[in-house]
Length: 160
Image (cartoon, rainbow, N blue to C red; front, side, top):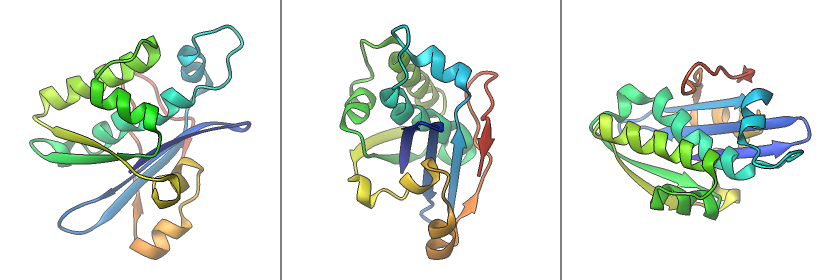
């Protein structure tokens, strides 16, 4: 389950994984402003929700890479536009195209078969960590926070 948030305090992403054999892990982190600025396609653009909803898809793949190799993985996304970009593997927005291309490259190199499905926001456990909240996940599922791994040399500004 993945999610992105664009708030006045900054842009953040989160993800939650439920492993078939048991165990729940999550990440939640703030995106560096330099990366958010790269996502903007217009001068002065501050809203990059499309990229914020796509970015946790690659972060989840990299963070749980060892667990996803050779596996079928279902990604639940609460943003319809991001879900469609992930399914099509294409976006006319270059920043979104780069993110989805990174996801496809990961899947190919790691023999990961990804399925992208819709989840309503109110049912998305990824919503809390994308807003830097973890208490409900820890209480309800005994979830464990992990350090997110970003593509390239980018590092999260702050993470749960």
